[in-house]
Length: 383
Image (cartoon, rainbow, N blue to C red):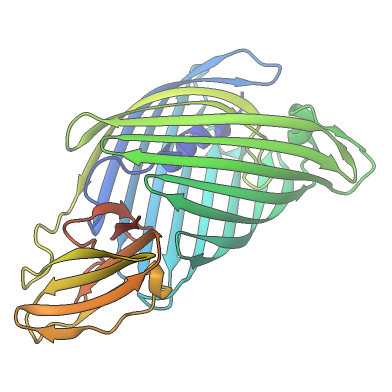
């Protein structure tokens, strides 16, 4: 069992389960997870490990950043450490384009650093269309194992969409590497005379979040190409349950396929952890104590939606939604605030309100959904 696997488990545990504590509008969030796992690499015995992960994230109007460090102590006394840093940026608060960039680093065997490690980077561009969107990205990684260096690259594209509390995504990716020991350990048959080896992956993932419960599931398929011969599949799932404002229990398990970019081996995983979350909270909507709500009047073939924001005349009020392509809509001044109206056809729409330079918020009387920048969207349903 390579200790990098355990570090990889902690990394997955931190990213596959969505936040279950704190509030969506929290500008900063700190998490600490402590748990245990059983890890089984192909052809090896089951190993137990103790897991510790610390992550911090900050969300603003145009930027979101995250830093995570995970440490693993395996039963055979080999230890591993992995760190992840990521930044998400969009050109403006109303832009449908989002750029993500990140880097990871891992050290295998803290008691003997020369044993090996990995470093990788990735870049991804997203574009949003209403309740979903598309992305494309690329990644590069370099691994060292027993004084031998290898490299891996990957390109991926995919799409995602949301219906209520359920979000789904589909991705296809192609990986190329010269790390033949990693692929052979995963029982991928190779032409050893080749300079590099390719595989094609397809993944379908689902994310469900309602109340104190969060569920994630992903199914991946892998096929060989060029100088490889393989057909594999992997199912992974995670559950998080918040039993207090700051504490949650997480359970995850399944199979992860060998990752040629991060140098992680093919393995089966079962883990459980206790999570503590601390978050800064804005108690009021903004410095003015503004509030907003939506009223809908049915009409033939749809409905007229009235958006009302209670705020002083000096406040800068912005309203946008999926029905406007997330472009700001024009508001008119009324006695106690600002108001707009839109005639909409039957369907599901998202809407958000921002006052001055505060975060995007859902109108107070709508069902709330999180966005990727720590803000909120409200859900409008026109029957």
